[in-house]
Image 1: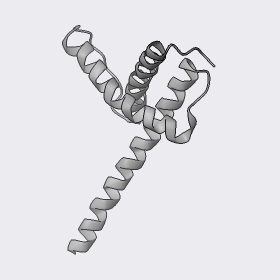
Image 2: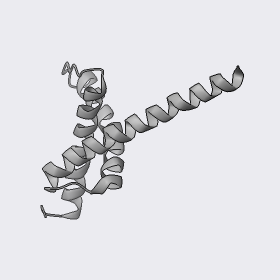
Image 3: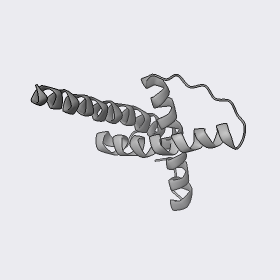
Length: 104
């Protein structure tokens, strides 16, 4: 019985990892389309989206607490994609400004 519970726990963790990769991939791809005109490839989109998810959470929390803006994002995966997109878009804009890159 303990093995079955452990297997279930690993499966749930794997599903969370896959969902995070999917959300990150979508958010990174969308941000890449807006900033660069195309995505950054599968791995690049996922990495940008995962970092963007963290940054998006920080940005949205800052807007809620410091600026007093009342944001209500959906609590499902669409809300996660929106939050990750906001962070990924901000990340790509900052990188573009720092590196002086243009839209290619």
